[in-house]
Length: 217
Image 1 (cartoon, rainbow, N blue to C red):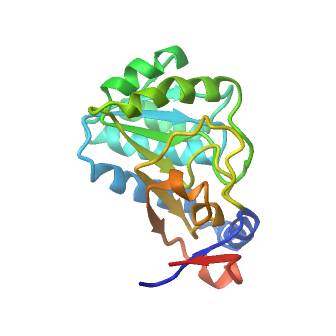
Image 2 (image 1 turned 180 degrees about the vertical axis):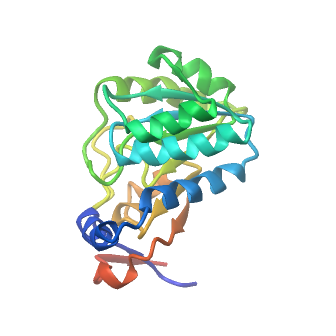
């Protein structure tokens, strides 16, 4: 088995910068790969939890692709702002916004819940609306008939650098689609236990990453 290599959020951001400066559409590439993985569940209904940053943008662009396929996609904002271009793409494709209070009912009827709340730009616990939504959805995952959870880059609330989980309000993922490089927190407990199966999407960061901070089988 090939060892897995984990990198810090700072390493990943630094490795992305030369590609972004060169005009590489990293978000669109990440979102296309995320959408491809989501299609593997053959979902009819998807609930997307949308955060404020690029993590939410990745989720929104993936939502746009699914909605264009004819999947019923509901969007729930967990922050006061979100990625505007991604939101327009999702809305134009037919995805619909819903209230945060509706999230548990929507999750109960969804085939997949996409956790696009926090990415590598944040390592703290969920707060405010985001925490309330996650705490309300979490009990549904104990049911025999439950939605699958797909985390965007890393499960929200797990530290990308050390795998710490400062608050139990985290949705355990069945699948984590991570971009560019595996984050160290996906390899280290307790965060690794929330990640489920991890799929790494290669964005060409390898030459810029440097040495990993952790390796695992």
